[in-house]
Image 1 (cartoon, rainbow, N blue to C red):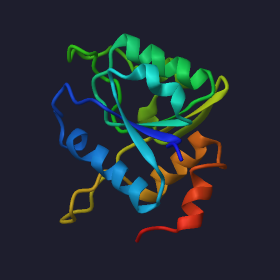
Image 2 (image 1 turned 90 degrees about the horizontal axis):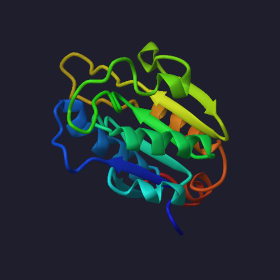
Image 3 (image 1 turned 45 degrees about the horizontal axis):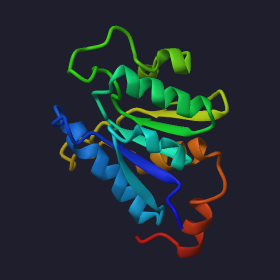
Length: 171
């Protein structure tokens, strides 16, 4: 069956933080461990967004104004977004943005913590990074919170959850 979820990746700009380097793999690993099929979509393939019920955006720091518009329209049109960490805080040239790129969409600053919000016909979930415990292996993603955010973005029901329940977790 076709994937209901896509993970947005930026292969053109090198990760400039440790989180940007590791968070996409952490999110993809959680999807795999829970038997949730997903596809990868590049920042140059935003025309493909409507093929998916939800888009996971793991610390994609650089997003063009056109990309932000496409993602906003996708959410308002019924898609689900899961923003993990610092998404879109820089433009496609690497310049910083004044204010937060998502505040107009969410009506709040994501820095305030986790946000779950209905936007138009869609849903947006913002999940801040998890601080790593002292001496622990650095992990930026709280798996349970990520899956809860994804479930919210998908509208809580339907594929891929039914598919995952049939197969059971891999762990």
